Image (cartoon, rainbow, N blue to C red; front, top):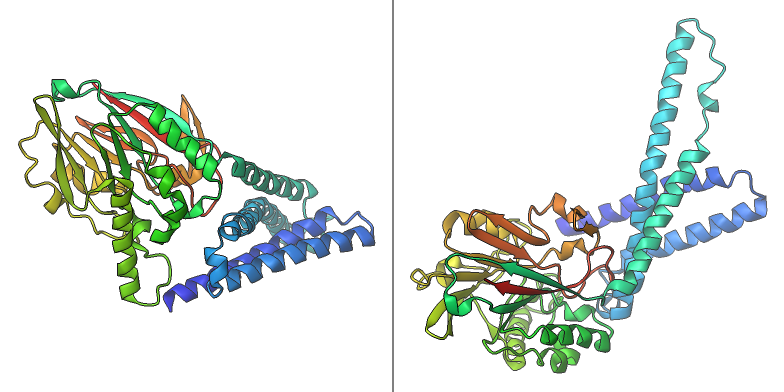
Length: 415
């Protein structure tokens, strides 16, 4: 009941934002002819009605949820329109605050005997602020549309990490870290293959995947098995599960169907030739030296995400190894448990955030709205001798694009 209440609240907010945005549209078209205004109003409300109807029907129409083209493009465009209108509404709100202030001042000074020429009813909307809101909202929407072209624009990021306690045989080890494939969102197999080729061209000694192979269902991998089974490395390919891999975000005919899906996904990892680590560790050997690689199921510090991970099962037996790498999907695990209870974990690898697939990055500046929720959300973080690397994600979900935060293949060289 609570989830449906939230859904209807979202729809109510959409309607309010549409009405509010329309006031600005009416302001900037007030000097136009009746025919032009009618055409603008008709187009505006036709699109708004279609968006609201789509959101209303989405939970009830299975085809909307499973059709990749609809989910990736139509739905994302409608959501993008909403956020564009929401941004524009910020400026309309500023205008209304201005108008409210002028109205209040007119009442105060009129009551004091002053003669204001403006009556409260004559305080009109500002065309400047209305145009500013519309232009910025339109700019955001255009930027999101442009980002559609970046969803397969893979970036190879090279990171060299130095550890005093790394065994000599592992110095120079090349580790490729990938995360968040989300195969259910893909619709361009050739483009996905180019990303896999980028991994192989990096000539890794070890490949580590930190979860979210699918959006919900194991069968999303059916068309991409022959792409990702090409991932090979001398020391192997190891993987963990992410929050989406459990099927928690879709409807199942029964609890058993959900369990069967998870079991099938585990088989998919095995068929790819990947060693799935489920709250356990393995020992990697190179010459006469050994290091421990731990992998846990999804564990998040946020209550809205599952805590399937069990460090209490993965860690025992690793105490005497001089160097430890932990694969844990959600970076909030680092602050919440790893640093507190396991200070000898040298390097943790995560994903999950995707950098929100939207932000700004350059050598001097990094920003994304996701940082309001995650302290560690993209790239390298250090606390004393412990390091965390958060991969920006190989795939995409929800928004079928990338703006500023490109899909990532990480090449980590240990030294």
